[in-house]
Image (cartoon, rainbow, N blue to C red; front, top):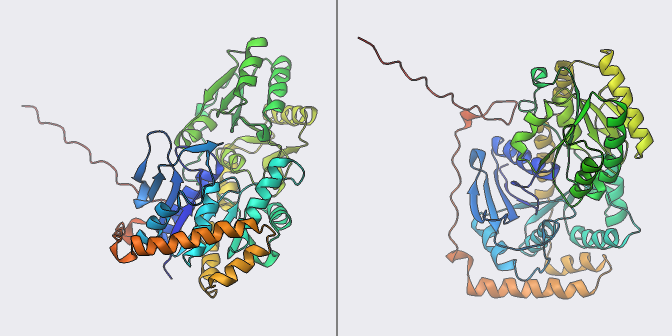
Length: 452
């Protein structure tokens, strides 16, 4: 059965992160399996309107201003006409929202439910239950999933967390892990500095990524091991701490801050390192450590959230999320590297390629779509009852207002007057049978001119 899918999230390229990579890779594989996929996100700088990516993946960069942390303000009513128009124009049947942080994903799912579409949500993060931001986010997620058909989590720890904080029945939650494109993230030991040991960090420089721990670890490890350098890619509000530490400890030549990087450049950064360091304080999954292991790096990571489920013990050094434990893990990795006790980069890559495959993720996601498409359609009354169970009665006024606006728009802008978008044609022979990567044609060699 062919589906018409809308991937909705505030987080997409050119922004860099695990959610962005997940949406892109999953979309490419679903297109390769014969489905139509579009991406709905907000504008990034001058990137506004419709853009086409590899294999005809259409991306709608909506002209909506960012409110906080790359997310739009949850107005519901203001963005409703545009979202409705796109969903009808593309003949979408299933809306797949991503990330609990994304207000655009929640808005699109709620609007889609009022239009009678199926909705699926993927939760990529873990949240607590005590602080104010977590309470607000959890309540908003509970409202969004109250009438959603199914939820996907990237780890079993993430599933337990989502079931508790969003009050979703466990039968409506599936676990489908992330993967990595092993054809792109390949090792290249020749890029490494033979006289130095390079520790690579690729992360958003925000609090939950453990930047405060990172600052203390870099300063201490550089004082203990003069042969160790750090290569840091990423940007965020905590970058100032790293710059300050680098100035105070005079580590300008040993700590390189690359800033925000395109995802296409991540592999070229990883292959320059020997060790990959992850200091996250909370993580439902961690795609960065899988990409690093695929490039042959020894991974040192905090064992928080779903990270212990990601890699086998011989590919990762797991530690507690504190400075002494992380320093101990890094010293073990450095010692094993010097004694040649670690797996070779080629063997690391081979292990990861067997464990993780995006086509397998796409196939399991297809099973969720099949289950969702077979569920009966709810009327407005049944949908309102689902929202009543969430315990926020004032939100019913917002849902009712959105429903009224949709009915008015059906009169002002009838569906018959909306131009239906043509599908991007893709010959089936372009795709490999067991991979979602398209073979690219090699440029023809120019013939040498004859010399008399």
